[in-house]
Length: 507
Image (cartoon, rainbow, N blue to C red; front, top):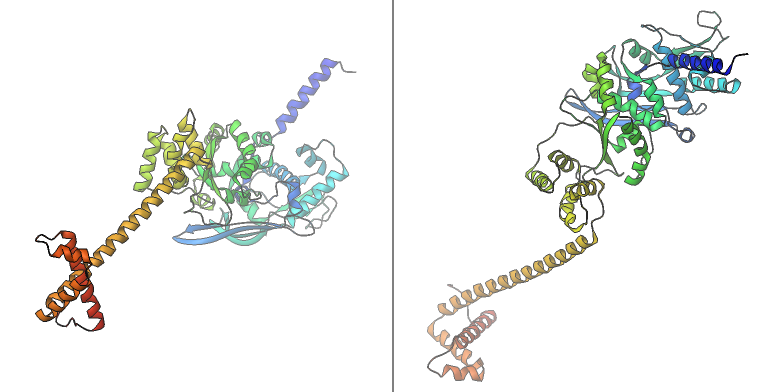
């Protein structure tokens, strides 16, 4: 019987041997890293029958709508988390084979697959689960409309195909008539061709296992490919939240708080492990987004782990243009700012916000929100007003009550000012019309013959009030009296003109 120290030594050696069997790097086919195939949770496979991703890309000067659709067979259901694990184990087997790989590949026994899957208790039940997985993936179809890129043929595929084509279990007849001595798998032709053409992305398997959660591992797959598309001038990659929902796939949340709750635990894990330097949520300006569902931008900055991974492993596919075009939502080249945007940047810089951060805020945030918070920040008690302002703009916080009251008072003042100006404008317009009418009536009066003018004067004097008549008897007549006399005269000319007693011919 072994002593405790010997047992311990044997256990350590066994652990070292087991760890040595774990692959450092697993190479995964690029298209199936970018586009969704497996559901991430068991609850999803019961309600999901398909996954679809659509976008518009520009190729050869033309805009094209491309799509990727994965459809499950109703009898076998949609591939889920366990199926994803089995596929990863099969990827490890593929990595051990020399290129070019030919169909079929040997899967070995279900026992060996259980060991790769780290299933501690295994038997008939687990073997049946693996068997069902293989059948489910075989019966799940992929429809590519310009999304799947064939490196061998250097083109995007318009085709319907499968990840796996066929499986022959141990003891069943092989195509050559022999009996299978183990389990054999036929890979889909497009998938197999890309593996042989080395259109693969190295995945750090130990790091992948460390991440554990479905969203974190899926983001690692997707972002590790996208980071290779960055050039020296680009500091981050950008996705719409709605795009990520299609690619992971996950349910689109209507509220930002729920969207952050959905993704940020995975974000934090990727940041803690230095795959991400940082991640930012950004609002989409209303002028850029007229969509029915709420949406945001997500900015991802590669961390030291991602940069090290890119430096360490370089494969030829990363240098080809097609991979960049195949990726959704490429980051657009920076556009020059308008005068209004430059003014906003300068105002933010005056508030101690760095030029880079100010540029990002103006570029990706709603400008009305920025204008609001440039004023509202003075109504807060924040010690670090710059940091407070950045967060308030990014997350569109509710403005302070004091600011809202001040804005309401200012709105009322402007409204009163507007009413006053409108009234003054109306009065001026009425005065202008009266002056024009007075000129016309005076001109008509002056065009009358002396006799008619005398009649008008006599009628004017008759209609004058008593105290005005007395004023006319004085040597000096006041301006008010003269104005009253003139107005009364015009009143009579207008009245007689209307009745036809005088005519304005010749005027």
